[in-house]
Structures are given as C-alpha cells and as structure tokens.
Image 1 (cartoon, rainbow, N blue to C red):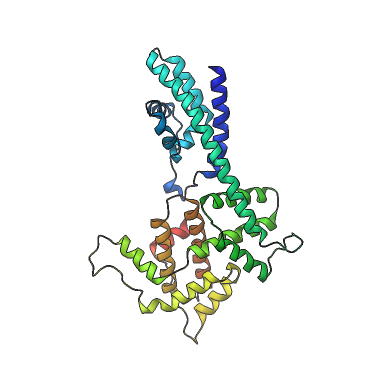
Image 2: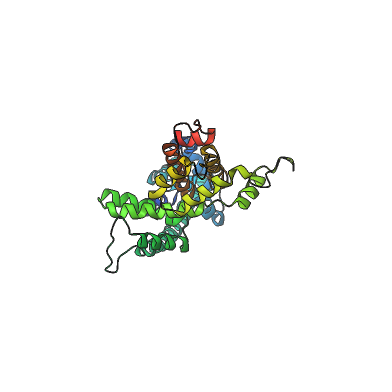
Length: 326
C-alpha cells in the first residue's frame, strides 16, 4: 500500500510539471477557474473517478480542470485517507482500483506530454536557428535579413499550442537568466505568429461575422466591408506586414497625412475591434493562441492611440476599451 502511494505521488509530481506547461493560462480575471482546494470538492472528484470505467478514465483525466487537480500530490494522499477511513469493503476496493488505474493513466499522460514538449522544443529551436549568423551567434537587434528569415521560418512552422507554451516557458527562463537577446528573439516569434494569425481578409471576416450573427435576418447579416473602411484595412494590413518596431512611424504617417487623406482613426480601431471579436469569440477560451493574439492587439491599440492626432476622435468602442483596461 505505501509503495503504491509513493509511486503515485511521484507520478503526480511529474504530471504537475507537465500540466503546468500544457494547461492553458487564463485570460483575464473573469475567466480564471476556481482552483479545487476543499476536501469536499476533491472527494467528489475521487468518487466520480472511482466509478468511472477504466477505459473512460484517460478521457476524464485529460480534461484540464481534472488534470490540474489530479496532478497534485494531495489528491493521492486523499485517496489513501479515504481508503483507510472507509469500512465499506466494496468502496475500499474501488479506491484501490482507482489508484492502480490512475497510476497507469498518469504514466501514459507523462509519456505523451514529454513527447509533445520535445517535438515543440525542436520546432521552436529550428525557428530560432533561422535568425542565427553564419557562425551560429545571434546579433540583437536582428538585421533586416535575419528578421525576414525568422518571419519566414515562423510562417512555415506549425506554431500550435505546444510551441506557444514552449515559447512562454523559454521566455520566462531566459528572463530569469538575464538572456535579453533570446527574450527579444522569442518576442519576435510571438509577434510574427500573431501578425500572420490576425491578417485581415474582408471575405473571411464577413463570413465569420455572418456565422456569429446566424440568428439575425438575411438583411441584417454582413455581406461585404463598407467602402469607408477600405483605407483603414489597407493600413491594418501594412501594420501586419511590417515589424512592430516600425509601427509608430507607419501610424504617424497614416493617421496624420493630408495628401493622401489621413486614415480615420475610428475606422482603423473598428478593424481592430473586428479582430478582437475573432479572438474572443472564435478562439478557444484561455488558450495560448488567444492570449498571444489578445496581447498583440492590445499593443496595437495603444500604438494607434499614441500616434493619432490630438483632434482625432477618442473614446474607443467598448470592446477596445475593455482590452485597454485589462
């Protein structure tokens, strides 16, 4: 019994590390899940899993809310306590069977997680290597040539949740180690990923908006972008195609010109708001993709506000303001 529980605690510690990397961070306090801390809630989960068929257990444990709880050593200590406390023989057998089944399930989860992180780490390493000089060193800030190479590598790579999770972990470690150059390159990776993911296509945008307004009448559904926004769309596209380091100059020129006429700030913010709606409503809630894209758009809003002329309309739309306030 003690040997089994010791093994389970060791597995739990390993899964806790893995789940900390793969479980999605929450975006904003309103979406932050309530941690399972009370023994009553933990007991309820143990009871649920104890009566779950063994072949259904991996699916249950893979759920993020369950993983965060099962990945805590306290969870297994509680199973042992309940097993010792109960006088019901059948219930005790259920708890023991759960401990054994969880042992096998968690071993498989750890193995899959390790393989997934190893693959993501290799893909990220290949992307970062594209920015290296011929001697393998990195010169920061990146030259135009190396920045373009990094952008192309990000576009060609399969940047999924595992890769973004790895970027997040690598950035934290690089910051702790004082590796400012690597931090700058990792931030470029996120910037290039977000810019590509948030490219604005009018046809796609109207189709998505039509999907989101499925309950509306045919007359109320959007079918095309209004002509007044064409100039703003062109400006937005230019921002997505260029490095964020160049945004201030591009925005000053676009928002303050007289010939050709300046881009209307409100129209440009409306395009950004359409992208915010895509991120909030179409991305998986709390995913790394959602968080990275949201932070990218928040920075873009701040740059637009900072570079708009004083006489330009202010008080952005509610959803834009909500992003600024978070």
